[in-house]
Length: 454
Image 1 (cartoon, rainbow, N blue to C red):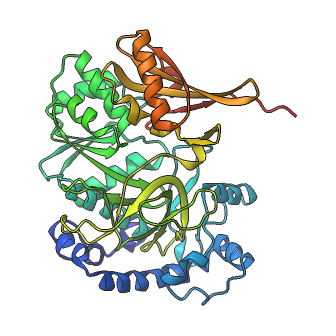
Image 2 (image 1 turned 180 degrees about the vertical axis):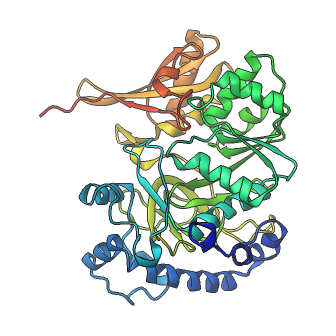
Image 3 (image 1 turned 90 degrees about the vertical axis):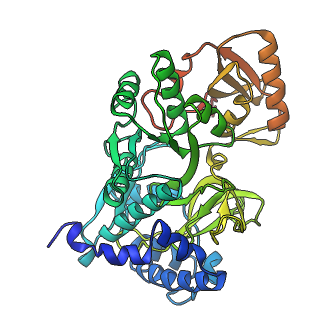
């Protein structure tokens, strides 16, 4: 049988990457030595496959590596990392798909999607049959860990079209749970007012999506006078988002998880709410210094770099530098999960603005805004040149505008960021056209107005 399902052994996948109680009693309970042995076996298969893919073979050969030089995970740092920039350069050199996929011979079948294009042109994404379904299984594992039940009605606001997100969530929930999924998509797919009316009519108990649009839907429901008794909100949240989102949705439990289109879910919270547990049976994660690329110690923020241990088909992933900042830490002994942890998303190193020698991450500013009840939490940053130096202004939406609020916010940002930035308060909804929050699953947070003169 051809196609995706003819290539799968689902029972074997569930044995190798269990979920629910089998996960907690299996991989999550492994000793560090037993886990390392499992990772080594899986890593050897990934490296063997990656050497067959032109993208890796050319990069590694140019770096002076030969097959067999990397004998295990202790040698991983000798492998050059790569980023989306390298993938897009591959696409430009060999359009339209680049040379980083291995669609050849027995590996001709692929599931194709793209990234959302938040940081540039959408990137092609390829998944082999088993790679895709294990990725789906792991997201279902994360949802189960965070409390998803089979009787839940799950309202999903991830985007569709060629973008991976909405399809990924739909497949995870429908393939590996009995919960009912309502694939609403973003505001571009279904207007926000219609979304909250649908949630109320169908009795949604779980909302999944990105923090910004999740918060926008709560405001829309409030304006419509709708009471939607959500039990869970599962998505991608910054440090300041959790309590505000829980309050906005009537006290719903809020859980964070992390992943990117290339890798699928990498880590997820558990009820212990003390960091995100990295699914180490499926991923090896490092934090890299954004400037040098060298691994940083636990407790220091760095670019999350992922090696995926189950992708041995179309697109193996060895040391993918996501450019997403996070901080790694040891396992939480009280959680019952022996996997290392990460802090979650702390901003993007390639969306950084350097002001007077200080690194400022626009995506991290939302945490400071959440401290002010008069602000809606919506904002956009403008970076520009003035008087021969770079400056940044934060345009923040406020329910009530006065000089004292602007001054208090300016002072809080100065203390939090370590540098002075301008503050402009605007009314609710006035940043929407700039952030595109009603249309995009990831709103724009930085407008670069700098002029480069030659």
